[in-house]
Length: 475
Image 1 (cartoon, rainbow, N blue to C red):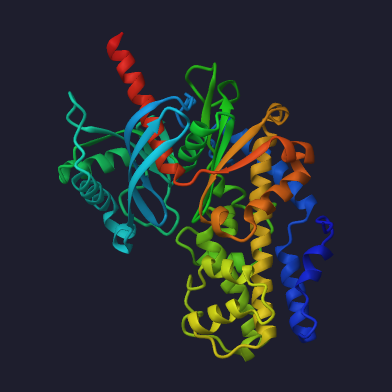
Image 2 (tube, rainbow, N blue to C red; image 1 turned 60 degrees about the vertical axis):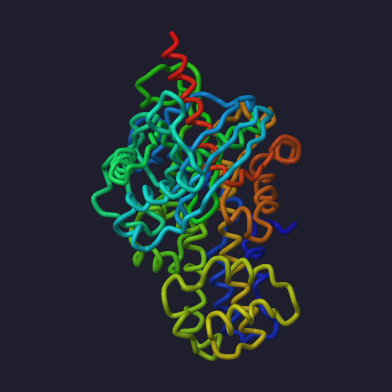
């Protein structure tokens, strides 16, 4: 394995023997700007710990949000029943009927609705109500006996300030959403009002973040789960923390609670992150400039745009494509991260998959092999930075609970980057070995795909809420 603390190991792989000196010089400078050597990762971990501690102590705009989620019961894997769940992500709304089978397995009936641009910009809450109404009608779902409404868990994959298990005020939009008159308001009330307008007989009894849902889903199957992570359109994580360590928590101090880090907001001031001109261009033109900076460096919504900016920088210097571009490539967010995945995975001699993306999909004039090699190298260096930054954050959270490293630890992960980006999981393990120790990573750290975890997890939390309600009613 290359010495990942030597800057040369981040530069030399991207030199192209057949390329001009000018192109190789630019690729070297670009690779160095995207490099995350081991010492930089250690610096990021140290800064992460400081931001975590500050956020646990009190709400602080310069720290990680570290939001208590009010989720304080671990699933055992033995729970049974059918539960409804909504999962609002950056791309889709999923409506799910989850069957908990009591043997650490579950069944899932779901319907996926692509979120329209109109919903992202204005009528999201009514869009949700309409989709839930369609699902209930198509699956003939009725409220349980003795109830007027169907209890439901709601995975809401945007930053909220949680005020109760079934209430939370929207902190900000991200992932390209801009729905007005929503920030600062309770997302459960907004959704419930839409249900009433559309006569949808559903009551949201729990609202959770997608990472909390992922954590709880993984924990239903793997009780030693300590952390849930999303590496997808966006990125975030949640983990179990001792209540005694949450200084800003005003309730009972015994036991533990899931904390939502909202780690996409890490280092918005870019004190330690390897921030480049290509990141800055994306950031200043985004809908939330200066915010979610870390997320913009590692998540699926943004990686392709960073790569597009870097590729066009080479085009503008007439170093690739003979200085030509295309109408498609010139438009923001047209270089999808899925294209990056296809390009990085292409190891053919002529880079035929790269040619297909560039010439057939993006309509760039005929390319040379050096052009394609340069594009692939740009994608690889940006993807490598993304996985090293991802590993740094995961390691930082696990190192914040050092007592866990002596035990087996499962981490539930969901999202398109984890599922589909080439070698993401194996690279995550490899980088983690450096900072968490080979013994722990090789023998006790277990990364699990919690596919569709955010929806199933919401149903699991709804189940715990209903159990507590029934117990209170029987008392």
